[in-house]
Length: 82
Picture 1 (cartoon, helix red, strand yellow):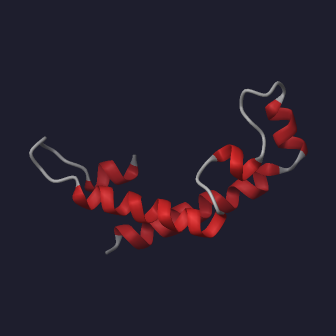
Picture 2 (cartoon, rainbow, N blue to C red; picture 1 turned 180 degrees about the vertical axis):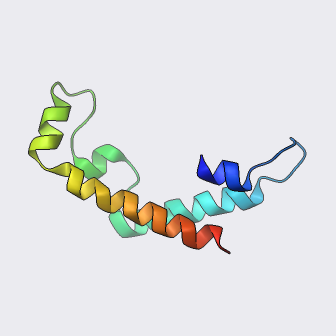
Picture 3 (cartoon, one colour; picture 1 turned 30 degrees about the vertical axis):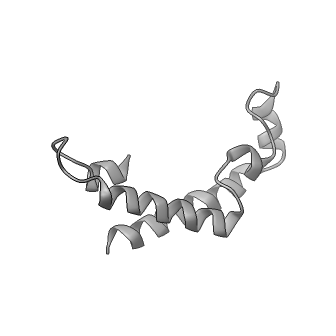
């Protein structure tokens, strides 16, 4: 959403290229760093699974997910500054 707000279009005829390029590069970098952009593949617990929240907490996944968020914020700031 931040990319859309910062680099999106005010009118339909304006280009989406800047926002699209930032998102593509962000996803590419995340996949390269972590191997996937899919939460289940990163964490290993499907949301459909009963008691997924308790399992997530028991596995201390909050600490792991903080690394994902930190990477995204840092990388987005780099890309947006171009």
